[in-house]
Length: 406
Image (cartoon, rainbow, N blue to C red; front, side):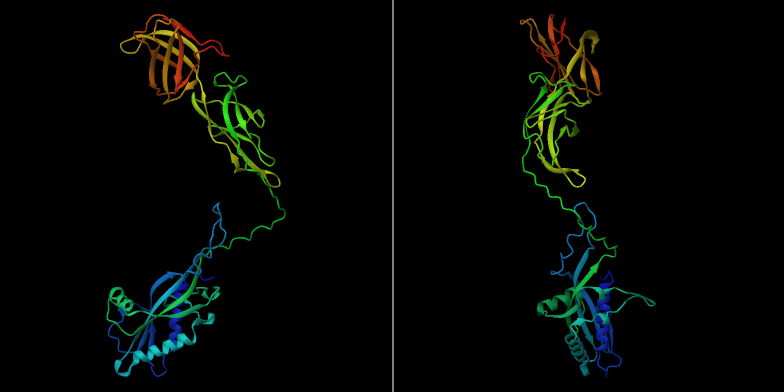
């Protein structure tokens, strides 16, 4: 297939073809390939070939698609298909009608030989002493020259706007089609298919209806808890696998059934909202290989990881001016940027509930100290809220919530 020199090769070959068609009696005539404005006041006869426009060929334009696979690997060489628009101008003495005689000779030559023979394709002259092949003779189609009919308005625009010089006798031809292929290594042929594996899988989407603590569904979900995903279609059909993702990270479930999946929460989760998702990718091939991104997946199911208070003490000299306070140790560790509040529920109904905020913590910590100025005396049930997730206020599997007397 032709390379990037193909356009220049067509011009060189057209010049050679017209040179061979020059009338025998015009021994001084020649064929050039410069812009028309470079030829001024020419007295000797001659023909000039000027490539003034290049357009995509509509028939071949997308014939090379796709050139690359979805993974970016090379399928075949990119192929550019172009049509070349030539303006052929004629020069000579009007007294002897040399321009018109040259026009007649050129028209006859291009009508008698409308296609460019492969044997007539010229090498491209790179310098006075160096030339290079374009491989134009190896492309699928031959180059065909077709006359272009200009209206008076189009001809006027071409000379007055594009060329901006005085008009001389001219005609136009379209050279089509020039196929330019990238100079690259030919991709290897596709591997031969030895065996066929056909897998059919029903579109049966898993659905998570609830995320609860395990084994006690009524208990809050805390760090280190086991959880159960309840729902439907939670086991993959034959030829698939069931994967569980907590906050986008794959986890290994301990029990998987069609309506429930049980697993342990991973370490490192911060208190607050979490997400769970089930994916069922396809397993196919010989040997069988898991194909991530295939199959079906459930929607994201949200659940809350509640903090747990492990210690509560009353402290002094907190804040400015120094005053009383309450120190609380929580699990899991509060992460930087999380919002933290202390909630005190009075055991004496006469007293009012109290809430104190630390705002967003600036560094990860398990030990939180709250200033509690003007806290009425009494006994309070202590609870902590981390990003809205609250430690238990009611007795549960872990025992009663902590209290403090002030």
